[in-house]
Image (cartoon, rainbow, N blue to C red; front, side, top):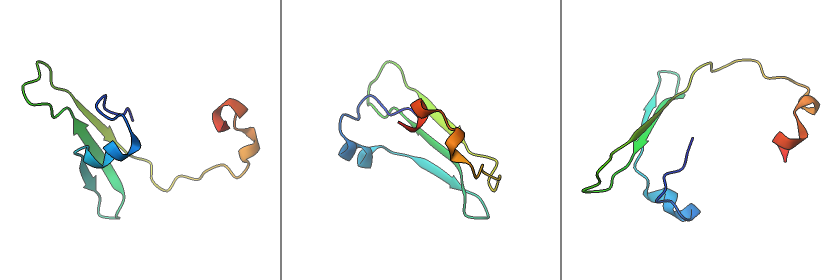
Length: 70
């Protein structure tokens, strides 16, 4: 998920307005945020839908590319 341009430091994330939908099982199913700049010429919204809860993850993490792990 992209970080809004107005976030310059980690502490700024505490001031980003989010809408969060939680399903009946307590999983976060959707996250939505957008620009909240008053008088901006362009407004935007990002919606992230989360699915596939409970899928089996691989037990052998050694196959993850080294560039991904860092």
